Image 1: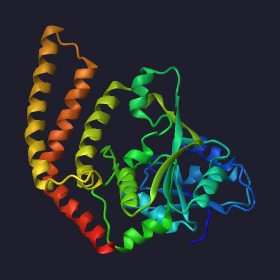
Image 2 (image 1 turned 120 degrees about the horizontal axis):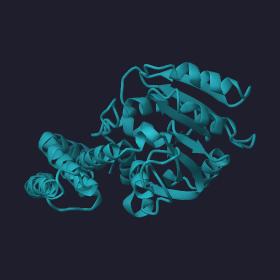
Image 3 (image 1 turned 180 degrees about the vertical axis):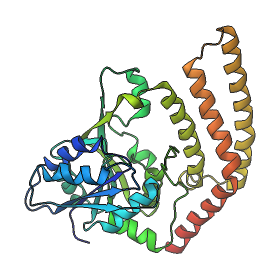
Image 4 (image 1 turned 60 degrees about the vertical axis):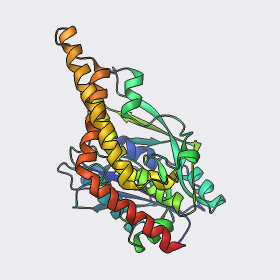
Amino acid sequence: MTPGISIIVCCYNSASRLPETIKHLALQQVPSGIPWEVIIIDNASTDDTKQIAQNEWDKFELSYPKFTVTDQLTPGLSAAREKGIEQAAYEYLLFCDDDNWLYPNYVSASYHIMNADLQIGAIGGCGIIEAEQPASITDEELKKLAVNGYQDWAETHHWVYGAGAVYRKSILMKLQKQGWHQISSDRKGKKLLGGGDVEICFMIYLKGYKIIASDKLLFKHFVPLKRQQNTKVSDTSFWDAYTNVLLNSYYPILNNDKRSIEEIINKWVVSSTIKLTKSILSFHYNKIKTLGSNNINLKKAFSYNYGTWRALLKNRKKIIDHNKHIRQLLISQS
């Protein structure tokens, strides 16, 4: 696989967000010896994402790098990522979200870090929140909606968020050839399910590679006013919890937990039912006490507990089967 950077931007109805994102890609300061390209994946958009992407890039009249807009008609972020991986010409895959504004040296720094150590399987960047003003929620609430800051957990928890992350294509292609499939479908329409980026990192780590983060890879994460709502925060709590449950097909392996996956899930169903019941009682007691006003923290707690309980009941067999799938892949490689 040729060393170089393939920037992949997965888009769904991204027309309003793309101009600034593409501007930051076009203004990358990349030495002539570093091969790179930009791939826009239009993931079944119903707006003019494709045309806006091409028009914005054409404004800069660049002869290099290669700029491609590709359709992925199958909805969902995971499907869009797969199409980008398939299209990529180079070894280092840089996933840039449609609201990520990369600093000018991002491509160059990513290339040099990945090229310097063949054991690095994935590297995460450092997001800086850029909230549309006037912001309607607090800085703390914004941090729950957008990636922010240096990922100091990367080497101990073995994952980085997908925004601005760089992966080795050869590892992902090998996993695909071995039949690995993800348990999470990631975002699809209004379903804010996540975890696809975490799964990728977990499997890369389990294959013997390092997951790291770098504060040299800086980007701004734009948060428009329409995302700055407390309802979005509670929705995020639900889907964060739901995602966390699905990722338990990996956690026992990563943590060397000797219990069976069945025992882990069954005990969790019981404890999550108790937590959800307490959360419901607290939520309704507070409404009576405050004459109907909602406490956002109680609402988030309820959403998280409900997301956990619902995911466990709906996906128990799926998690157990996926855990066995991962273990079988790891056994077959040894």
